[in-house]
Amino acid sequence: MSGGPLLLKLEQHDRLSDEEKRVLENAISRIRVVEADEDIVHEGDHPSESNLLLDGFAARYKIFSNGRRQITAIHVPGDFVDLHSFLLRAMDHGVLALTPCRIAVVPHTMLERITAEHPHLTRLLWLNTLVDGAIHREWLTAMGRLSATAHMAHFICELFLRLNAVGRTDGDTIQLPLTQAELGDTLGLSTVHVNRVLQELRKEGLIRWQGDALTILDWERLKTVGEFTPTYLNLQHEDR
Image 1 (cartoon, rainbow, N blue to C red):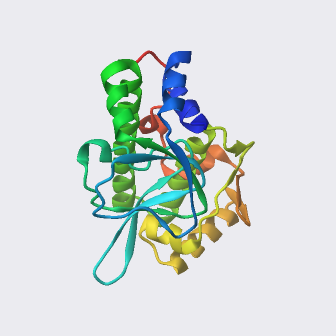
Image 2: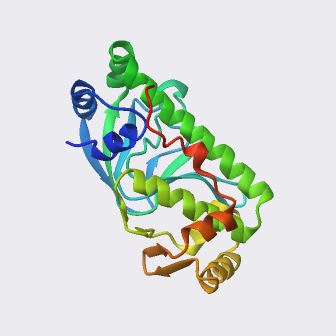
């Protein structure tokens, strides 16, 4: 069993000892596979374990009474999609597999042991949840104040850096197998508007998106269009 993406992600922030790496690996009880469009966790669940995404893309979401969906977070490999359930217990939202996902399951009893016996590792996992909160704040600000084009540019910049942190980039290219409907549910746009925005970014020579492969052609200009500053991702390596 391997929590490799999580180890890469945590080591972006601070060095892990060999013992801490073993503790994380041993905390995994099993590996599960969830197919695309299936729930990883249901709203209202009372989980006794948390799910670490190893491969694929997942999303936190809410469904409204009229059937419309709002995606509130996109998860990439290395993310705990529901670490907060360790303390909050009841899920107030669902987590959906956007693509086929491979997931490492960590029982809450193992998380209890980590918090009791490994304070440095606990701080790094806590930092993970703090970064989740920072991403939520950034998304809220972007949705409220950026134009649709700037919002899309910001979203692409963020995902690129998050995937790069866990070794899932190839030069300037990432694999991003999200549909325009899923992008719309994430950014609060119609599929027609999503298509128009992507065409604009292509026309400006900022991105190329063929199949699932998205290539950033001009990083500096894309950052400028998206008013993107990566401070909130806390990618700097320092003692914690």
